[in-house]
Image (cartoon, rainbow, N blue to C red; front, side, top):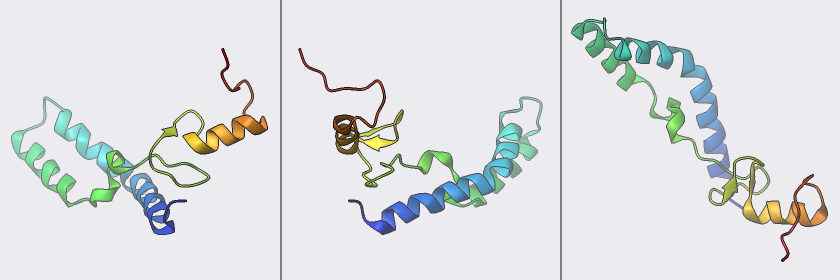
Length: 101
């Protein structure tokens, strides 16, 4: 089980990403626009740097929905490898079963 503080930190980051998504998209559009002036791009760059670091979606970490484990998380299921195996053995995941050959 992951520390509660780490799980809460990830939730806080997700909220910040949602809050600043529109503003970040507008600034990125200015930076990418080939017709924008150099001054406008520099101004957008400075504003982008002043946004909170945690508002960047790249800083997010995939975590298991049940245990909060940060590594070995299957994105399709949202579960860590251990919890996915347990759920599979119980039959909770439709269409998924233990391999045997």
